[in-house]
Image (cartoon, rainbow, N blue to C red; front, side, top):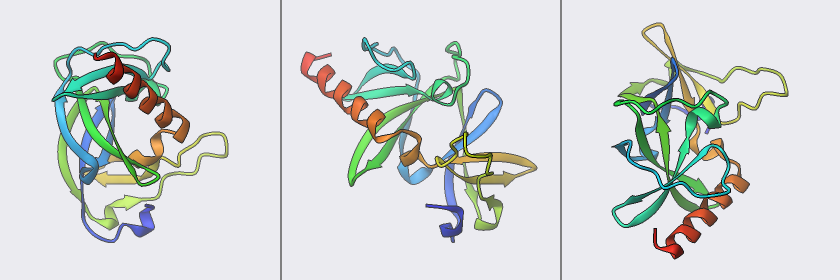
Amino acid sequence: MTVSTITQTTQYLTFKLEEEIFAFDISQVREVLDFTTVTKVPRTPEFMRGVINLRGSVVPVVDMRIKFGMPKAEKTVNTCTIIVEINLDGEKIVLGAMADSVQEVIDLEPNQIEPAPRIGTRLKTEFIKGMGKRNDQFIIILDIDRIFSSDEISLVQEIKGSVAEAGV
């Protein structure tokens, strides 16, 4: 979905990484959890924090700061895990996105969203749906389905499967 295809008011869950505000389309957010202990899984990419047990299901948790090239942060009382659904080739994949803090659910009108900036060919911004504007502040609207490559999602699925088999 691009900015030109956003034709109605949409709700977004906003969250912070460092001092920047990001947002996920609320329709892909299942719930927000306080950050709990994560079981580390050996030989996984740095952005993979591990897995959690969510009501009997193994859910991989990724550190959004590391995924976006930011320094790793220490856990605080505001650190949380946003449980999201990603669509990959018609399959729904559930994962946790670790954030510094959740802000609020907001409504953005189509006229409050601009296209993602073009920053040359070396920086990949295809995972940014657009830039929301609210109260003189920019909100980076993320396309959760495009943040992770299909290889990364396949790896997450493999990790989830092997952990489930091990009975963690």
